[in-house]
Length: 390
Ligand code: CAA
Image 1 (cartoon, protein in one colour):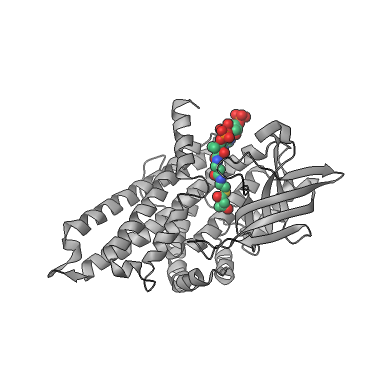
Image 2: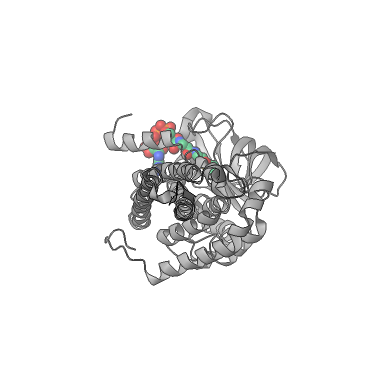
């Protein structure tokens, strides 16, 4: 598919990664998804295999352990993984977009060699840590501090809602180096989570994406070498926002995968289940729901492919794709909650039962409207860009 040239046929390479991801997800992930959702354990084994297949660093050049493919390849693979299980999708998305892609854009050669290669190949897990207990949507209001001391920064503070926090080997973290400068006083660092001074604190008991371990990270006099600072001092907020543009495409793909799984199960059920002497899909109350689900899914897909094409353009020209990424995530996430809600309704009691994955889709879909920019923040981003007003 080349969205820029409006050619809606996938290339052989794209079809290949889509099929590889679909086969793997259906065979290896789908059967274990309910068990990991229940336990909340991190699915280390399947994630390792995904690394071996090149899914943990799809856009990372082969020289740094990745698959050397483009954003569309990433989108296609991620959608397939999320159709089987959104938790695996979160881990894949954070590793690819928030960690590897950010470091590719802003890292030094030293950082790329040491901190991308092991993560893109799936041997190690990467995380991204911006949010704090008192700073979520208002991301620049952070309180964590990094203070220069010789060849190191000393990091102190509490970070929250870190996807992969309980298991990550390396974390890209944002901290204030100069509180007086507001967002221009924020800097980015890549830290080794095994070193002293980094404590993996409270694990979040979550409603959905339960196997994508999430926790607080507490920094207590953690020594981070200056050579691990990403970009210059004060560039952290721009780095965080630039990386979130890429991340938002990932979450849009996750939402598309959940919506697709909910839709496909609903079509099957509507064709099988009898009521009042007919298949329930013959009643308009059900069939119109299916029509709306399908239409929204395909519209979300086009917004995602447009955003993916804009991100490819960004690689060439540096032109921002904030608007396209925000629209794709906003629409796809609301499509996911719409479709998961409709799927529960179509399945009736069975939709509410843990015997089927439908209730899991419903719980998993909700996070896509919240993390990496709530729907409210995305509407603010889109409308500000369109009107120029603040
Ligand atoms: N790309 C590059 N630069 C950007 C940018 C982008 N997408 N967005 C903003 N900037 C720049 C602006 O140009 C501006 O720089 P200049 O002054 O040099 O022009 C600077 O950043 C400040 O921008 P704003 O004045 O617009 O900042 P703001 O504070 O008014 O609002 C916001 C910004 C849009 C509300 C932003 O804070 C935001 O997106 N908040 C949501 C944060 C978020 O998504 N958090 C999720 C965390 S990750 C997660 O969910 C957990 C996980 O592990 C998955």
